[in-house]
Length: 185
Image (cartoon, rainbow, N blue to C red; front, side):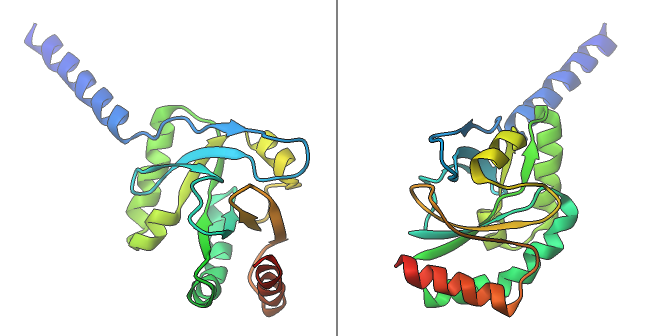
């Protein structure tokens, strides 16, 4: 009897840990027919929930949309540039939105806690919001053709996609992004 009671206690405690740490299922709502950034929800690495685009902090927001873990190195090529851009344009904020197909809560917990453990920088934790959604529907709404590259979007709080590119940072991409920011102000 004591073994069964101990086992049941362990199961209960494991369930409580999963319930506490596992991010809730993300929401995806396609709000219009034309290409746009749809309404999505997710949790950042500090376990705070956000609903985008309305919770985007900037008037203009640079969104990095990686689909695969190995694409983080591509996102990292942009970070010094977007940090400088934020310093020059206070109305611009960047976010990293790892976009992953829906999965069970235990799997979400392992993914998020693994990222959390690997990212000690507080700003990066605040701005990394994982989306566990129907990626094919999200890709249709945003006109993202595939998951093989990081997609970089300039988006306003209404969900309008004002500029886009893919891949690693280079000076030409940076200049065209700055031009889009200037044109949108």
